[in-house]
Length: 201
Image 1 (spheres, one colour):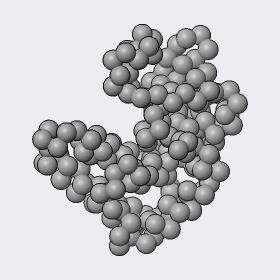
Image 2 (cartoon, helix red, strand yellow):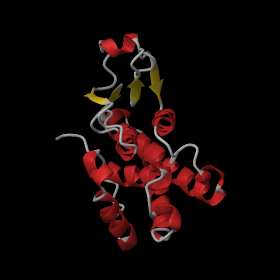
Image 3 (cartoon, helix red, strand yellow):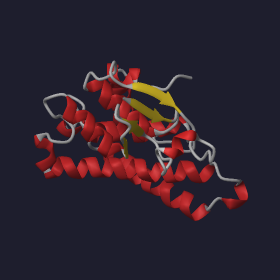
Image 4 (spheres, one colour):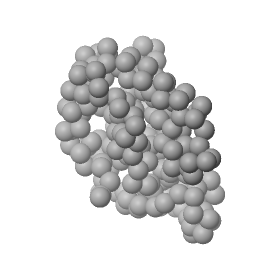
């Protein structure tokens, strides 16, 4: 199998964390790519051009983080991410959804600020900045929650991925005034699968 992703995509990093958590690193070749290249030969087999994308050994492609996570989860029992009991724990699902919403909004913000200055939308940037701040405040109150601690599931992985967007979006200052979230992030950053999932410099 081949897993394609960019070095900056938080979604691609999430799939790398999961493949490491499932012990699949020796079965998956990581391929670094760049998006928005109209001459990219991968577009012949992957027409949307989005990352991450997983290419199976028979040439089938799977795209979208939840789909790839579900596929990895199906390969090694027990299911921890897709088919686990957490999927019917509605409090857990709500926390996961908020962490995913944070990542989605931050990705919009990050894409907006790389556009030429005269094409950027201050309204979009401000909207996503405020959303991210509200969600960071929310997660500051949840750092001791069972749903964000213990063996990794999608809720803490989405939250880590969201906070990690600061590497490409310095204006996302989530650390100020949120000491519990800073400590949580530091602890998760040291987990083997999280450390090993980082893209090469």
